[in-house]
Amino acid sequence: MKLSKIIITGIFLCILFNGCHSSGGGNTKLDKDIKSVFESKTGQDAYLEMTKIATDYEIRKGYKSLSPIGKILYNVYWVEAEVNNGGFNQYFYNSSGEHAIDAVQSLDRIGASQTKELLQSAINNFPNSNVPSDRDERIRILKSIDPKNTLFDNLDDRFYDLSEDKMHLTVEYVKSNLQ
Image (cartoon, rainbow, N blue to C red):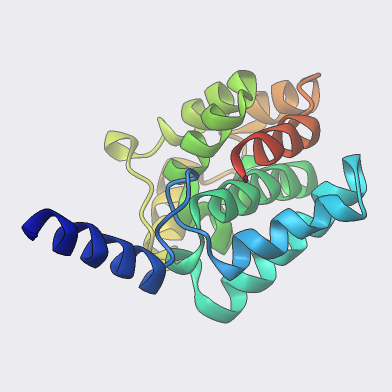
C-alpha cells in the first residue's frame, strides 16, 4: 500500500512540475515547441527556429526557467553570435556572458570541444576563472584585465578559424535528446 502511494505521489509531482522527461529538465512547453520544429524544418532553418524559441522564452520567463535543452540552444547560439560579431570581449560585455560557465557545459554536451576549449581559455583570464553574473562587475573586471581590448584577440582569431559545425552538432544533439 505504501509503495503505491509513493508511486502515485511521484507520478503526480512529475506531471505537476513537468519533470518526467529524459532531457533532465522536463517535458515543458518549451521542449514541446522545440521538438515541433522538426515537423517542418531541418538543418539551419531548424537551428535558427529552435534558438529563436529558446531566446524568446528566456526573454519572457528568464534564463532559470529554460529546460536543459533550452539552455543548450540559448548558450550555443549566443556564444556563436556574440563572438562572431565582436569577439569574446563582446560576449563577456553583453548579458550573454553571464552564462559563460553554463555555455562551456553546453558546448561540451553537443560535442563542440574546440569551441569549449576556447571559451574556457577566455574564462581563465578572469580572477579564479570566475565570470561574474553581474554585468557591471564583469565589465569592471574586463576593464581592469584588458584596458586596451586586446586580451582576447588571439582567441578570437582561433575561433574564426574553427571548422567545428556547432549548428549541426546542436541540431543533432537536440534531435537525439528530445523524445
